[in-house]
Length: 337
Picture 1 (spheres, rainbow, N blue to C red):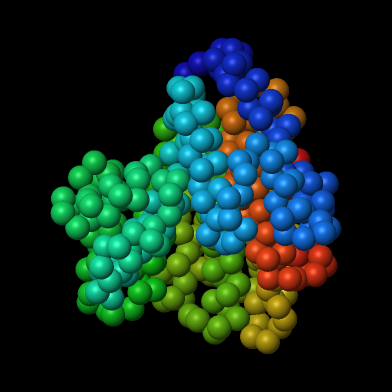
Picture 2 (picture 1 turned 180 degrees about the horizontal axis):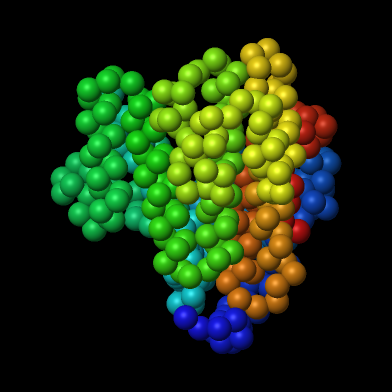
């Protein structure tokens, strides 16, 4: 295993490239300009400053096409660097498992390939076309074994239970297992910490929602995942009042404290709790900005681009729907820059 200094040298060119790309990220100032712009067309012009192409059509579909093009370009730009090529699959995993859910549910509902294809998400390890063709013809040949087994198991569970949520549980668990394994293969402790924190956030949300709905231990065992920094057994045994203690010292500490207070039915809206969960993960990632070279700036930038796409959707959909600035700002999360 190379030492820190050797790794820094390996990442020198890539880190410099990423630092240059960071200058075009959508900062809070740019977001404010989009929100305060005279109309949606003027708001869209800010995206050009961030390296996005021209928005051909000022609609939701036009925006998705623009974001998909930018996502594909980012993957092409970074995959030419071997170090980034090893990290990218961690950030592509979620799209693959989203598509697995579409495939399994679409088949169960009797949808044709064209309808299923329209709902598949780009940005995964395998193209939408390859996944759809593989699902229908070849048993997903060329995909990872973990992915193939999870999809087959989800199909069986859905066929036996008729409950799409049960199939989702199978695929969600496999997604985070594979994401964790992919992070481990990179040898990056920072990336492994990010994967574990994602699982912590998923588990925290699951426990709070389950407690509010009065769901018992059997349900929680289906949704609480292994692999986080907080042992699943501790979460299963916890009541709402114990969440703050379990997450003390975690980037999710504030979210856990609020989540504990909201665990009872009728205890209030979860909007601020959800924001705190996302902001806690971002706080962890923002540590990468203080590290000049290595895998951390790459990981931070990839996460920043994912968060940026979400922010763009939030702002532009709000502007197109005629929402006021205060409402749109209330839906935004903390930015990387």
